Amino acid sequence: MIGMFDSGLGGLSVWRQLTAQLPDEPVLYLADQGYCPYGGRSDAEIIARAEAITDYLLQQGVTLLLVACNTATSAAARHLRLKYPELPIVGMEPAIKPAALSSQSGSIGVLATQATLRGEKFRQLAAQLQNHATIFSQAGTGFVELVESGQLDGEQTHATVAAALAPLLAHNVDHIVLGCTHYPFLAPVIRAQLPAHIDIIDPTDAVVRQTLRLLTPALRSGPLSPAPYRFVTTGEISSMQQFLQHILQRPDRIEALASLH
Image (cartoon, rainbow, N blue to C red; front, side):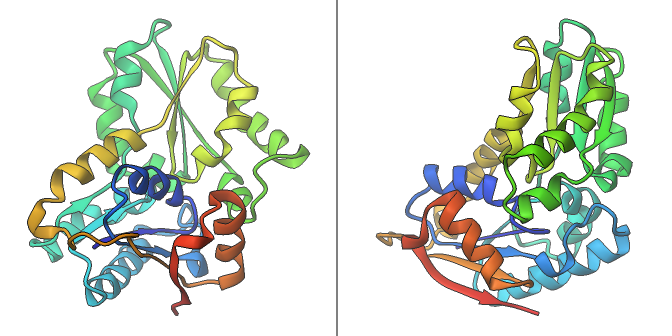
């Protein structure tokens, strides 16, 4: 069984693609909505949450962990790999490299949380690619909150997205990298505000491929049809339930929806 967690509902953008490609494997998804957003929290806080969540997921029998959160990956993935050396762990990171290597203008933009942008992993990636492209970063202020509340369109959503894109567009970027798993849910609004020549880069494909590579036969749960999908939140159940029903439209595959504190 695969265990996944995010600060909230954003990681369901990864869950959606993973379960489409791996329909027979049970997945337990934990949304840490009681502590969302992670972007403004310290690394120590995020590490503590990540460790507590991993302990819970292991108690539930997961054999592979997917940290479906860029901020948690940046702050805590290294710690988790040291603490749980036998557990295969897949994390998220902004897809800066493919954007930088394919840029024609020599400028790319990265949308992410403040915590991801200040993280060592992001700084290292940016430094390694500085000879290929100039990287301009921008925090997607308010993006996470919009997704958590299900506001994926509308006047406020368009205004919030426009405010974040404006500084990047001023630098003639030709790629915009989505550095938070919440952001793909806003991709239609982002796309609508970008010139046609600017590409949006989402790392989800690469993350799903890595998960499939690490999920060896020994780690799989065996054939189950249909595979049970469990969802747990540290916040209000109604928030997750509404998102699952109206955004993912998959209420038929929910085995359990519980609250964890």
